Length: 269
Image (tube, rainbow, N blue to C red; front, side, top):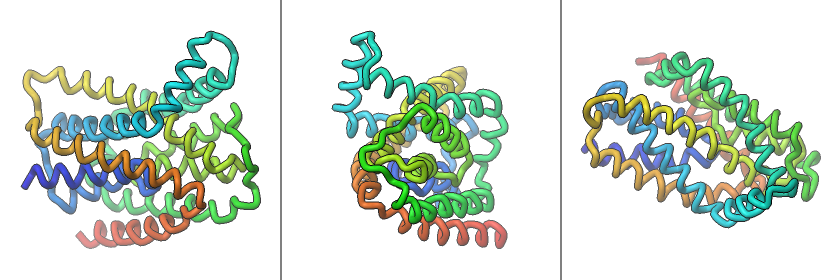
């Protein structure tokens, strides 16, 4: 049964990481509803790290051509479009890096099954997504992300460290409200998450391996990883098309409903 729960949570992570509904919030809700407990605090952390890393790999798979092009341009060692794009990504991760380093312990305490908090933040996510309904008039065809945009979108990503705030939802919504072309902001949003997640993964793995033994059963890690990877590839591809079609308001309604239910359930129990 624990393997089935690990698969379900992996699927939730893969889908919710790219769909604008908050992967962290849904993972917390899933753990509570499934009564999933892989072990102690380190076991819980390791499982979370593994499924997050799976979505990193799924992003790399979907954007493999773009990543290769960026690397080729970067290693030309001159100021070109690829170097500019990478520079903006690095600029965008500064806010979340500051938040993670300065408030790491405080943030970890928020991931303790507090579904009232998750529900409230899902309502915030829903509001952000709903606002994109009014962004159509501001959108500029072909407009790319600039350095000012990168900072603002980076701040939106930093806010999304809270469980229930969707990272993709907040960054894409912010980009659309800034008037950035739909396909351009989708690409930037999904690629900008790679450095912080990889960095956080390395730091968390360091904390986990300080233990003498693997704190969680390997089969749970493998099951969660595979489920998150496969669902992540599908969700990432789907989300790119949804952003282009401007259908984020449907997810706003979903977040309003789930957020309200989570709050009521949390207060009731």
